[in-house]
Image (cartoon, rainbow, N blue to C red; front, side):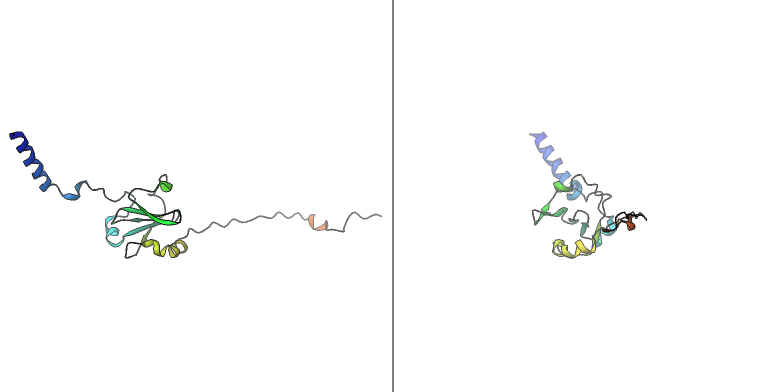
Length: 137
């Protein structure tokens, strides 16, 4: 009985001494530095078109045409290295950054690399027009 009382007292003291958030999972390692966290609530990933809510610690993503929320990284993005993926720290107040998704998709769209189409021109090609066959002499 003494051991049970001693264990209960120790557990109660530890509960009071250890901060509540000590075991809480912090933001992912790719999230912005502490100073930015104070100013930024949402991170937008333009190449994947999804959001991360820093305060709520969840992902907001399109799922079958509807916005969904997940505490873990959604399956379509699981193999993406978010540490190197382009990120935009949104200056957005509120809980639903996807309401402005139509703006974000255009504003933060990755610029396309323009491919130059090379047309090879053979100087002899311009002599072979329809109706201009070989001339008989």
